[in-house]
Length: 172
Image 1 (cartoon, rainbow, N blue to C red):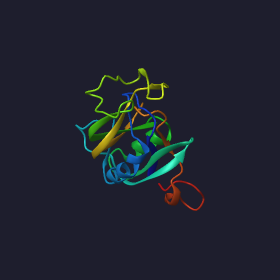
Image 2 (cartoon, rainbow, N blue to C red):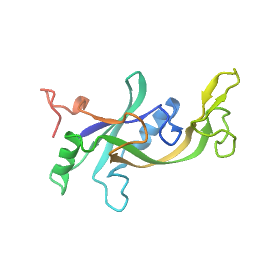
Image 3 (spheres, helix red, strand yellow):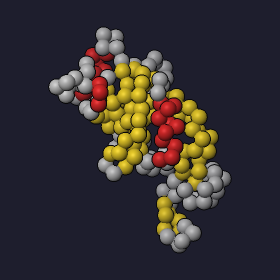
């Protein structure tokens, strides 16, 4: 069992954002989704998500995800070693959504004039950077262990909560 901070409310490298009000629904969709390495859909999953909850971390809202794999499965020990020694450091999510809501005007960003990462004046004449909110998330396809996630500061954690031994070490 391992856990990772997977989703935050920060703008990602594509100009998209998972707003906090979408987190409860997204956390439910994550449960029972497969875990891949590097979004490689040509191979079968290496693990499975079994728990997701919203937590505060570094003054921001995150979704923390727990996943498991079979210790004695082919590649199981290698997976553990790659996570525990920092080779696999970050997470990423594959998902489907229906509406990219513009942070400036609230319209579909594919149809409005605003471009992610550019600055615009809002209704109060304040400069605001454009991005889009992922709205109407319909499915989590998978999460992946990656070398660099699109969401800043995703990471694994040794805090497994109830999935730790009495001495504080992780369940292996």
